[in-house]
Length: 130
Image (tube, rainbow, N blue to C red; front, top):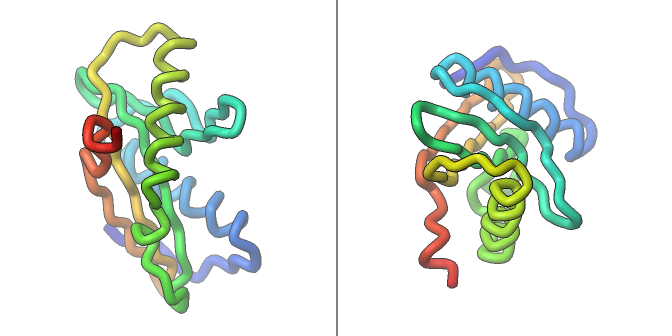
């Protein structure tokens, strides 16, 4: 999916916020219901928590400018995956939501004239992280 580009991003935090905005819009356009954005539990964070059908979806969003040497997906380390899974467990425990969960990743690459959004469902499998 592509969006309108040409967004000035001077700092990584600005890029991250912009990417999360694009990701949330993308999810809404695909029928997801956003429950939370930037949910925190101590040092753990979930970028987006959403529901799609009978699934609770935890979404990690990674944003890069087109001139970045690293692709967005490359920055999701095993440690980051562990923290995301731990945060998801904490979220479920605190909210009591009883749905099957999955972990998606949305990559946003910002070009001067457009944005590329790549959504990978079931990108992280908690059982293989142990």
